[in-house]
Length: 299
Ligand code: ATP
Ligand code: MG
Image 1 (spheres, rainbow, N blue to C red):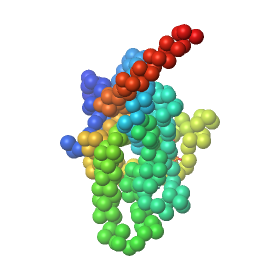
Image 2 (image 1 turned 135 degrees about the vertical axis):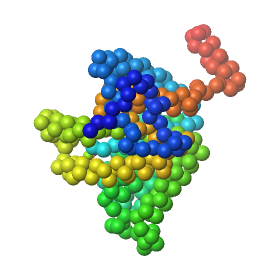
Image 3 (image 1 turned 90 degrees about the vertical axis):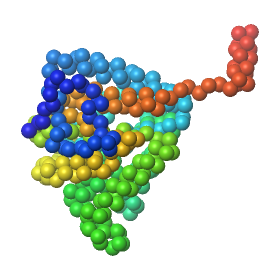
Image 4 (image 1 turned 60 degrees about the vertical axis):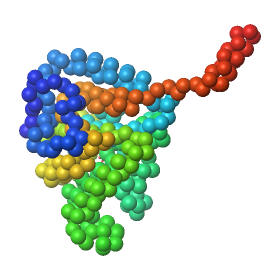
């Protein structure tokens, strides 16, 4: 059931971006670009080049310390979040980058509002945070499973029904992301769009390969059965929260090596938009440096 894009289509993340200016329809979003396997080496080479450039820009971002970056990943199970994160992280100096997984909320997390745990792990400016899942779970899995019915909250929060409840959350997320931008942060939001057939293959691999057994849980099949509800939730969420400053990249994920290239393009573009520069030394400090130089040379 993989939806294939026109093979001739250019392989660029520009075709995958939603910034709120157009409507996102999940039925039109390809899960594969059907790229010929012969091109794998070439594409991996392009990805490696992008990773090198990302590393250079991260160095400047860290030195500059003015702007922070959050790269968040959402996806159905087995779409390749972990391996994509492993790959993208390879670009960066570990000093200045952190990864956070958003699992089932703990009781402490549930006792706070849902954005709290994200706020706690926002990176300092100059740094990058990678979110493996995110506060978007609170409008995705929460919506699909009607979790709002079980939240310990006053009646006024939920009494007007799930639609109003989630509409408020979309607005809160838009406001949160706008605030991040206004306060010196950029967000890259990636939805790894895997097909139902490809997910089946990857689940089978997780079951058949002992080294991957730990990645599979029987609960994954229950979620798979809810596929249409999840797709509706993703479509709604992306339309409600895509914005110029916090765009969604809907990445075809059936071919991992194509997905990695597209993700590297998206992150590289954002780092280029930030355009970080090494701080310039004020004149008096430059004089001090020159004096230190003299001192060393005359030792
Ligand atoms: P993989 O894709 O390899 O299975 P994963 O990200 O699914 O990795 P798991 O530990 O299997 O990692 O699952 C984490 C689970 O936590 C997911 O099912 C996710 O939907 C759930 N989760 C995350 N945030 C929330 C939340 N706010 N409310 C309810 N469930 C959540
Ligand atoms: Mg899982």
